[in-house]
Length: 495
Image (cartoon, rainbow, N blue to C red; front, top):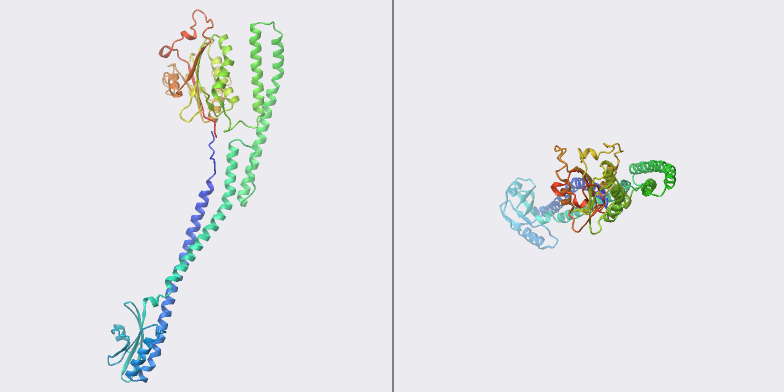
């Protein structure tokens, strides 16, 4: 049974991989771009603050040699009180006097006393030192830049850059998803068409859309589906024509039977001709059907099996065969059409009549299949059994001159519904075969889990001869003679 998902999800995996690839690639590009840019922003901010502090310190330097100490002190106090003043200024005179904002002399100040203007990192920020030489020695003007002033606006700029990076990443993922969808959507529709073709819907065609490669695959698939349809149509027409040719000899045979005097033998021949005519008509209908019913087909197994038993019972009575019937009481829906199930039951029962002697009884049981639903049909006879159950199911294998196709048809019908066919023997003729237990009938009865069986014995009241046991007198359990057992499992109808 071909398992077909209800919804094709293959495109999601492709789209997810494409999004992941684009996300990784975009992230690498953003990191390579934004990290250096963020470092550059920080460097520009620190240099801007340092340059502003240096300008203020250099603006005070000309006053050092032009005014006296008291005037310089008053000037520094006025500068410190100005709201436009951003950086505290300190002046270290050559004699060690400190004017302006109080600050201890650091090693950098001692270095600047040598006449070199320097910039040094210190606790809480950065000090910008300007050396001004004079007759009494070198005066050092210090402008202090706090950490907040150094990195003013840096973190805000970093946040903007981070948000921009996230926005670009999201935009790239959106574009990648749209691009992936344009590729995977036609592929999803293409896969859906292949599943429909696999189910037997040969009218399914793939749309000619998507990238050029996908369109080429769609065109090739459509051509293949069309060719398969043509071949199947030709095959069906050939089989139908061949079957139709059989109607002419059947008509002649019917005329010959009708010409016989009315008797029991004439009635039996008429029934056989009717059955053959119905079989030929069924072959023609099957051949002309566009396709075998798929997952939506179904029928009541109990009704079909009972109908086929009614068909075979007259022949069983005529040959002196006792028939034990054990059918489930309620309906058992199976995922097989009524015609296919009838053909399968006929093939199994016909196998009993064809390969066992007259007077050989058989048993038919139909029960619910658990778990999973469906039905289990078991047919066991009192014949010589099977030497190799697996070989008996091989297509074309027959040890009695038949075509060997009947059981293969049964197996294919069962598997199409999600079940299978099993064959074994209750006779110990082949003890080396572990697939055939000593009493496969009892094993199958246990598997069937019959809840409300309908049991009856057909043909038990018909005279069988002095040495032939009647259906009611036939041995049971361990005293029952061996024979072939066929267990056919049919799955439930598919939604």
